[in-house]
Amino acid sequence: MRNECIYLKGNERNVKEATQAVKKILKEIERGRGDTRKRIKDAEEKDPTCITTPKRLVKAKSEGQIAYLKAVASNDIVISIGPAGTGKTYLGVAKAVSELIAKKVERIILTRPAVEAGESLGFLPGAIEEKVDPYLRPLYDALNDFLPYDRIKKYLSMKIIEVAPLAYMRGRTLNDSFIILDEAQNTTGMQMKMFLTRMGWRSKVVVTGDITQIDLPSNIYSGLVEIQHLLKNIPGIKFIYLNEKDVVRHHLVQKIIKAYEAKDSK
Image 1 (cartoon, rainbow, N blue to C red):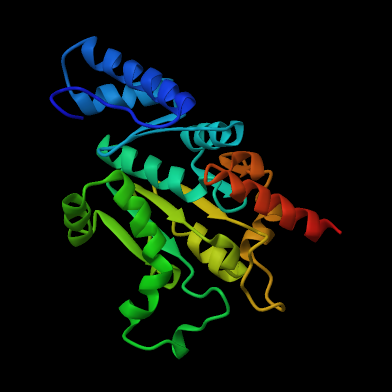
Image 2: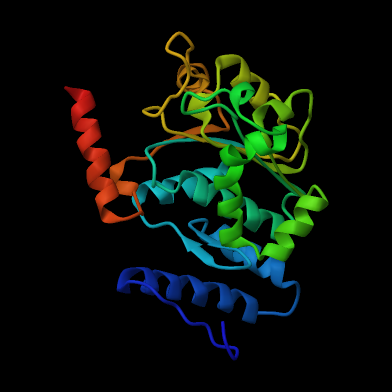
């Protein structure tokens, strides 16, 4: 935004969708006086596939992403499973930021299992913070897309936003929170149970993962795979499956994913 004008940049389809979404939100704000946050919240409730954050407007770009955001709007627990680049984490963090700004939750908790790609923290150099930082960095990157740096720093210092390894969730009850477990394919069954039972009153949980990228030892069953059978028929818990059609990164990413899927199916 410059000189009270909003400039949208991108390909024709994305600009058109973003323009329509901005017009909807501005119309809601202009209809009456009152709290702008409430106007934005009301607009999002009418169109859950459009997310407003302080830095950008986010719009679902595929049928799978639309289903994902609608599921988050209408369920307390959503498990999103799909390949890289489908927006699982990106949209989840965007929604968390939006609900925090709209005061629908009091804090955001972002977590990941801190062991992947065959590495063990015990063999990495440095203090625990230095060891886990590379694993958590993608979550900070996602936050940076939606919030100014100074606000991220403030929220982290006030514990309004927490970014921590999954082990740090043990023994806690998380009320009034938007909680995201990323890279959930690398949790064990016990870790997944521990995480899901942290959920408190007025909280929302989003679990994301890619079951084709499990880095656990071969003798350990993934908690994300397990809950597909355990929790599939529980009301209030929704499973969303994304595929290469939902990839919104470089167009070659779709083709790469398709090639690997074809190899694995042989």
